[in-house]
Image 1 (cartoon, rainbow, N blue to C red):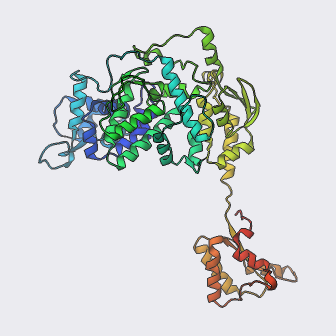
Image 2: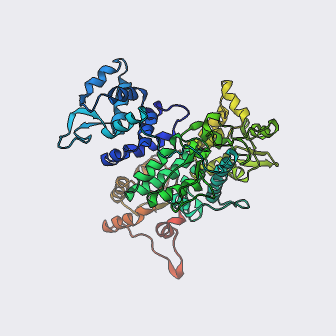
Image 3: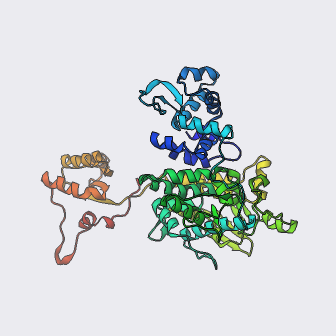
Length: 552
């Protein structure tokens, strides 16, 4: 599905819609039918989730009425030399319930036939109305209210609010005048398992280094999944999809009709996707809302990349294309000297493993410190080094190479981005390869708590030893064994004494092994000595922590 969804992405929308595709595909038939009564979900599915061939099928069937047809009709419309494209188009149409079995599209008393297909009635009705211009787009106000915010104010809100979320996760201090994230954000973070007892989890470490689009969708999808469990997800889902065509500064008429929709609006405001004015707020708290660059970042890769690259602070212009700004948004063109900081912010990774971050943001210095050794810090420049010790420490905390690479590439300096135009890569290949080597070295060995059993020569018969070894091996608890064969080799070599029998098992196998040996009437296991002293074998048996970890 990921490949099919990405094939249908256009105009800068790459993986944002694909993150929502799985949620839409898992909706029930009743939910999908109810969702398609609104125009925004219909436009989103048609434009963003359907491959080009599936879009052609829909357009050919749109004004043909609700007549059922067989799948062979669609096969005749596709080239016989592209069976994969046909299969992908049919799978997407069925997965998002644009094509349904005849009898399931709303015909009363009709039995569903697996051989006949029909275009979804609600989907067909709304898409045709949009093409004919019979209804306005819901959720978007044609005119702005009094005193709309400027582009700089919207950008400042998007960056400051998201920095507050990251500061909450990393345990840093907010700046003067910055408000903490609301309880709504903290609840979603708790559902995602990003923090545990005030510390970042493995998922939390990966989250803070991800690109902005994935971060925003992780929070929104967690909210939608929780609302789905309560059966209140359709309203919030329509509200989210209505943002897919908004521009920066677009005034939004999002009326919260349910408590779930109102909580979602509060969440979007708190993470910087929406900006709420101080005036004209009604009882639902949904008036006076404007889309920020973060709202575009949820659906557009170019807007997400612009936000991810901004590590210098909220005072720098994001340099988004002019067509992404609403006509009522007062975007002031900066002077040449004001544009200078835009060219100086970002991260440069050199082939000698040095990392140069042109930033004065303490937050991004903290993020770099998760996997870099900090060498020098100047007012507008931080120099770090990618070394084995901090990189392995980050990997033990759950950070993967792909998270590190995504952060370094997402926040790249314009000079590093020019490497792509020259046929190179943003991060030098030798640096990427070394990070992958460090990561792969961690998966070659594993540690576990173990107990070591040793018997002197003649203390345990071979039959009892083999029975104990087979029991541990069948349960997956055996780590290492030295049996009688080793003793026989020693005898053949003319050694005076045989080596003792040894079993190394996981700690949870110790009581099982004791019970087996006791039932077989083997030599009694060592017992505590007089005056409170304990033999070494007794310590190994009864105190697993006394035996060090065994690395098989």
